[in-house]
Length: 403
Ligand code: PMP
Ligand code: GLN
Image (cartoon, rainbow, N blue to C red; front, side, top):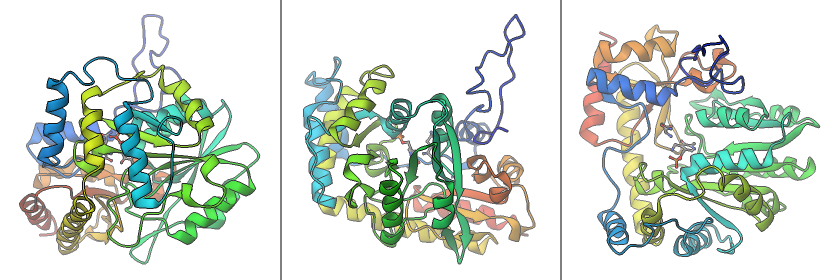
């Protein structure tokens, strides 16, 4: 079953043998590529793939230009990342979470969070190991677990009281003797759930009790509207077993730069670096210098970003509610998951493929982020990292659906 993607690949070589290997056979084109191409083809408003329609701060862009002009990072940067960025990452962890890290041994700069996730899984998972992930999950998780030869074990977040609920007993029951690690994402894409201190404490206690590693994907760490982001690494016993991942794409609105990073113990960083060095080796030289400056922006930059996005969340949530969708108002991220059953619709994938033709809007069907597709069949995700007038125009168009 193609759990994570919209289309499978059946291309065969001259001998009749499939070109794509068995590990990747179920993964066709990512839903983001399919839906963004649909938006381009139809001229629809793209509330599918999560990228802002406004670039990040001018001073950060200018820092990248300066680095390019000054010849900083135009040749291979050091494997772990340029020292300026590694230091800025540790300062950021200290400033926001009181977590200390050594920039030389406990930080690794990667090609976006995507490479950090891939390298961590490739480094830490043996074929046959089980990896627990919260479902619906970000699409690269399943593909990277498969590339590492691991077995994914989904624990399903279930809609309840206008949000999504993690059943901690289900998580506990999912752990077996073969479980190697838990791959956690908070704030969570696509549901917008932010794990609470209590939930994280239970995850931490389970990890310690069962001697598991945890990879935490925290790319939306600064996009929390209700509640707070608490890094799992800050819980007792977690420093030595957690790989914490983030990225400049979401926080600084430069998704195309693909500058990500991870922090972890020296032993874990060394392990993940073993895989990362053979993926890209290094990337984004001049952008690394610019992201170092971005991470040092004053607190007000981060809180203003959050407040702006909270207002956008409310515009989109209210507009979708008015259009007849059941809306799960997210506590974080820049996505809203909706249920389309209230519109008399059942199948999110068919709905999203038809939506540009029906009203000129593109969205993402959550079903592709589930192994238990039925659990997400009627869920559709909309991104709100867009200009206010774009959000108003899109929800106006969506309101025509019901009429
Ligand atoms: N994790 C999650 C949960 C995401 O939504 C995304 C998309 N930005 C990524 C990882 C990938 O981040 P990057 O673009 O930095 O590779
Ligand atoms: N993270 C983005 C999203 O969830 C997509 C990134 C990508 O296209 N791989 O929309």
